[in-house]
Amino acid sequence: MLTKTNPDAIIMGTVTEIEMIDKLMEIAEVTDPKFLSRKIKHYPELVKYLDSFHGSNLNEKAYNAIHGDSHICKYGNQMKFRSFTYGYRMCGNSGTCKCKRDIMAGEYGAISMAAKKRTSAEQAKINQKRRETCLEKYGAANGKGTRVMIPNIKDISAGRK
Ligand SMILES: [Zn+2]
Picture 1 (tube, rainbow, N blue to C red):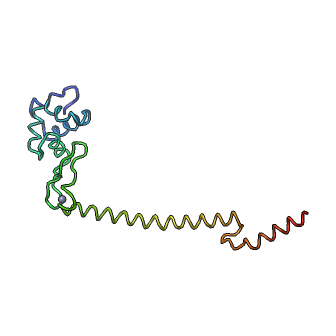
Picture 2: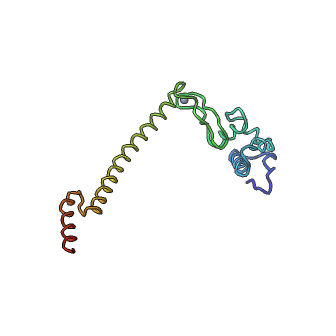
Picture 3: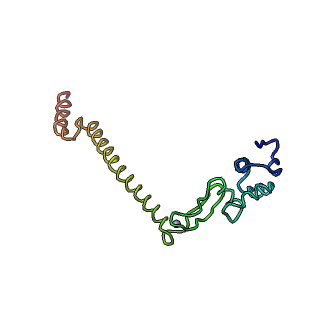
């Protein structure tokens, strides 16, 4: 097992694949992503190991070593690598691949569902607020009590004169 007290053990050979990944994750954890590839280069064995992974640079290879090969969209198109932290972005746009359209359709579906839900919930809230206002102002939930109440108030003030 590699420890932080002996970080160069990895270049002394006989390390398993799991240890390679462990080492990589250990480096990634304490390294600014901007300097990750530079840091990885300090470990030739790790660079050699990462070479078997897909990627045009060490960051991409490191990402694939940790997260598994996920650079091909479900329609077989190459996705674009963004960064070690974020991984891959879409293979293209809705004009170039169906996967983007699938996602958009899914998102629109979710949005319209949420909008419907919100509309009925908000309508119920508005109705409730209207009832409360009527109750406060006129002492009746539907506002029809006003006609009765106004003459009553007049009678009371007339009686006080
Ligand atoms: Zn695609």
